[in-house]
Amino acid sequence: MLKYLAALLVLAACAWAANVKLYMKDGSYHVVREYQVQGDRVHFYSVERSDWEDIPLELIDLKKTQSEASDRQERLEADARSQAEEEKALRDLETEKRRIPQDPGVYWLLGTQVQVIKNAESTVKTNKGRAILKKLAPIPVVSGKATLELQGANSLNVFKNPEQEFYLQLSEPERFGIARLTSKAGVRIVENITVMPVVNEYVEELDMVDILKREIDNGGLYKIWPKEKLPPGEYAVVEYTEGKMNIQVWDFAIK
Image 1 (cartoon, rainbow, N blue to C red):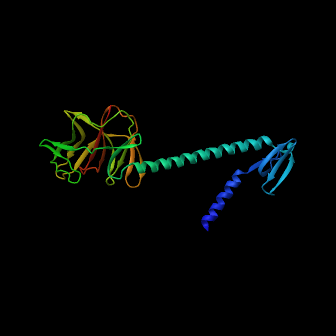
Image 2 (cartoon, one colour; image 1 turned 30 degrees about the horizontal axis):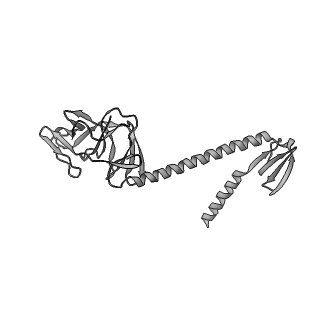
Image 3 (tube, rainbow, N blue to C red; image 1 turned 90 degrees about the vertical axis):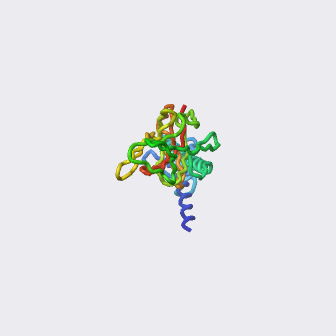
């Protein structure tokens, strides 16, 4: 019952919005459904009396009536455009949701086709050598300095668009973003790591890029892109929990 009452109220509001104020020169007005200038008279349909009536044209402030009607029409058209844009944005959002797989990872669109970026294998380099970093079982690192590295000086995932957009489906609620990598001696350094003595805690230093992000749904799917155009170089989308040495890396380059 309440739903039908709400619908009737909406219809009544719309009907009232479609009415026109026919202004008199003395400042009063009639609420009319429509009006016509017929010679020296104005023929109008009175909403209040539900009937057609006539009034001398010389008593009508036609300029004010037309000006207000024109302003209202512009507002109605602007509201309609805004609503149409909002509805289109919601439809586009639903389309994005359907395109991107639910499996954790990083994706991008080539036209309308979803492309996958492979999770890069990263290694931790210390003065004792290198070891592969595994998300579910982070390796122990002795006190001191270390670096997280990717093999090869350049990524095979090359983009020309400096404002490339990515979709990130999180595996769990964690920090994420785009990191700038440093190429050095045939490897790309993702982050510098300091292992604090005694407490054996990790301090991870990433060179993060300012990004913009939009949550596509509440299941952990985000769309991210750089806030400013990325200069040519090596980068990676990263997902991590600070101090846990569980970082995941999806590398790419801007050429």
